Image 1 (cartoon, rainbow, N blue to C red):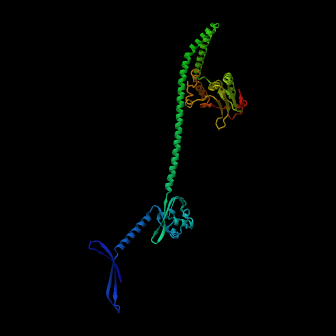
Image 2: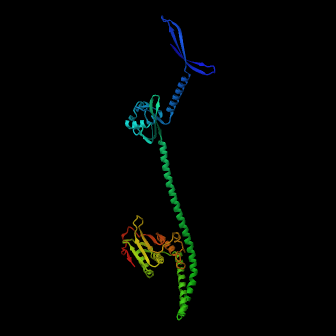
Image 3: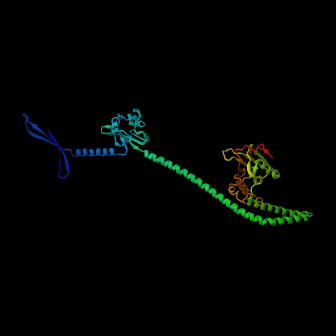
Amino acid sequence: MWRSTIINRRKDGTLNHEDLTITPIRDGNGTITHFIGIKQDITEKTRALEALQASELRYRRLFESAKDGILILDADSGQIVDVNPFLADMLGYAREELVGKEIWEIGVFKDVVASKADFVELQSQRYIRYEDLPLKPHSGLVKQVEFVSNSYLAGHMRVIQCNIRDITERKLAKEALRESNQHLEQTLAELRAKSNELTGMTQQLWQASKLATVGELAASIAHELNNPLATVSLKIETLAAQLSDDPDKLRAVQVVADEVERMGKLVSNLLQFSRRTHQQISTVNVSEEIDKSLELVEYHLRSNKIQVIRNYAEDVPTIQADRQQLRQVFLNLLTNASDAIKGGGTLTVSVTEPHDGQTPRMVRVEFIDSGAGIELANLEKIWDPFFTTKPEGKGTGLGLAICRRVIEEHHGSIAIESEIGRGTKITIDLPATNGDDEDNVTPLPASKRNV
């Protein structure tokens, strides 16, 4: 029998494939008497076979050149049927070391399929996806991969195809981006802090400029007013002496004298605000200075039914300060507190050493009154010269500005907290004389003494 495939051209010019089989026929003596030829058109079959071969070739080329790892498993046995070069290179194995092995025998896949029981789950689900899966190749350097498995029929055999993509670089880039964003956020926060600090310094410089300008103006006005006021005061004293026998006229003159005295105090405050006298620094016991200041305003406090509560902590260190300037600060704050309390109330004065790790050690003084309080909108303006919340003619608006300047010149700080209907708290922090020298620590009176 002879068999061959021949190609014929049809009348329309197309080619067809034919399978030709020629079988010899013999007689009884074995002599060939004739031939039987059978032709079968196999054009479609040939084309289908060529298409299949082309498809397999394309698949193989894709399989071999893919930049993702591809693993083909026998869905029934779990044996590795095939691996592509990229996966073998990624894992650090030769292809021959992988093909024919059951997947759970390969240690690198222990986090995917650690046992036959896990493989049963892989079989049943047909599709599994893992993200951020760690694989540890022979090199020991752990890679982060994306693992996707699909199950399908390949001819008469069901296989599981596993696509393994190395996402280590992507993860590292993502982590680097996250760290970069954190760094940028931190830098932005630092810039905001610096901006706020710069804004604060600008406000301080502006405030200092205003104080300097107001100080120069105050000095000029005060010197211009002092001489006329002295002359008026002298003339009024002379007139009062002449009218000693006329009570009605004397009373009117006395009103004028009181107003002149008030103007004199205003001029004195202006001069005090503008004058930067040479400080006379000495060791000061803060509690004693507060007590002396309270003695000066004791009558005023008692007449306004204000109860003073002293909270003096023991063993508070002394400070280095100008005694007269410090007493002026205390008098201003005591007077402000008494003016704020209407119809009686309490004024608590505390002297403590805050133990919050500050260096150097500090002495803290607090004045807390039960007065009417200050509106929030006025708290920012309260330190401005000539700003006052008192009734017209009652205050000059220089008291707190002088207080702040004195405290800052002593390297301390002063702050105010207030709420309408809840009263006001003034807090002063001043550096202690020497936090490590016990000779500078003076026992103070017992706490909570009342006037």
